[in-house]
Every structure is written in C-alpha cells, then in structure tokens.
Length: 252
Image 1 (cartoon, rainbow, N blue to C red):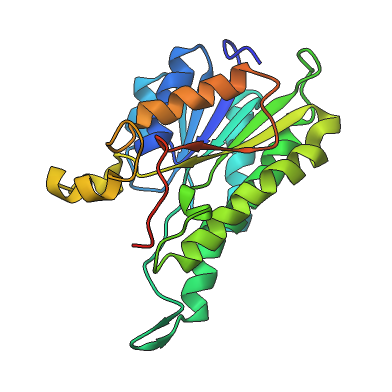
Image 2 (cartoon, rainbow, N blue to C red):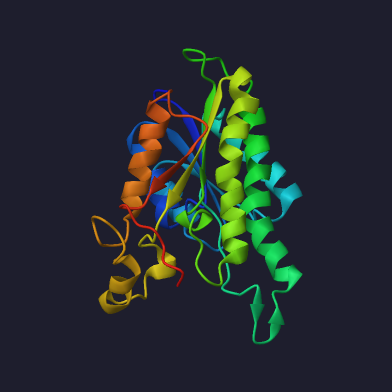
C-alpha cells in the first residue's frame, strides 16, 4: 500500500516506538492521528507532524470505540493502524507471598491482549469501507514481544498476553482477507523507550549479551522502519515478525 495520502492511527503514538512510527508515517506522506493517554505528549507531537491527537484509555473499551470513531472522522478515513500501547508487571506464578493474583493477571491481559483485539475489530470496520487499492483496503500492525516466545521468570502475565497478540495475526488475517485487510504483529526485543530510559550502559550490557548483532537495545526508529516496510509490501501478512537482533531471552 502506498503511504502517501493515506490516513493512519497510531495508538500509543506519544512516546517510544509509537512516536517514531507516527513521525515516520507523517514524513512518508500519511496524515496521522495519535491516540494516547490524557496527559501524554500526544498533542504536542501531533502538532509537530501536522497530525491530530485524541486522548484515550485503551482499557476503557466503550470509550475507545467513541474515540476511534472521532479520530477516523477527523482524518476522513482509515487505511493504516499501528497499536503499540501496553505494559506489564513482574510477578511469579508462585512467589514468596503466595500465588499470582488473578486481578493482576487479568489487568495485564486486558491491557495488552483484550485492548488490542478491541482496537483491531473497530479499526477493521473502519477500513472495510475503503475503496480498494490493488484489492487492499487497510493494514493493521500490532505489537507483541519476544517474551511471547521466551518469557522470562516473572513475566507469565505479560508473556501470555503478548503470545495472544502473536497468535491472533494469522487468524485475523484470514478473517479479514476477504475485505482486503492485512494483519501483522511485530515482536521487539529490548528497545530504548521511556521504560528503559533510566538504564545505564552497565545495566543494559547483560540484558543484550545474548543478541547475535548488534548487542544493544533496539531504537524506536528501527521499529518504525519495519512498520513502513510492512505497509509497503502486500505479501507480508498473517505473521509475527521478530525484531530482536537474533536475541533469545534467557530465563532471567
């Protein structure tokens, strides 16, 4: 799909990989709406790239539907959706204080998996009415993690939710193929984002020592480059692409 002239939504676009993606899409000629938490830098970043900003809580499932509808109406359509918002906690299945509580597990699954599916179903609806371009109406890119495949100790909730995102890609691509909508997921390793901003070089070194090359954290711009490649290449569909420098997480 040609990016120039297209309408894009980046959920989580106020920081990290989402911000880099919003900036890259805008530079490539798309009109971009940033959806992110109230109080984020979304408004300022949207102004910088000539886009729009809509505050959203992705775990407010009803509110998301209203916000996305407003964003798409503001853009005048939707062709590209990139979803990067999410998070996790560190807690073992059974720890010193007892078993992993269900409330925390459910909240992480809601934040990462259920919220992503909710966004996807609504984004697909908006894309389905587009005039097809070489048979294609839209592209959805979700964010998994290599923890989906090699989750570390204490990542049971996070890994389960990110594995769900990876697992949805093929099924959803098959569901939406008749509408000409592609679905992919990206599974990054450790990336330099706000969550890792306080890490020193000494702290980072052991976390990336298992990478083949380069032995460093990924850069948000590298995530954005992969998104642009996905949008551009119609044969990329129904899979989760690792973006990890050949790294495999150790148990801890």
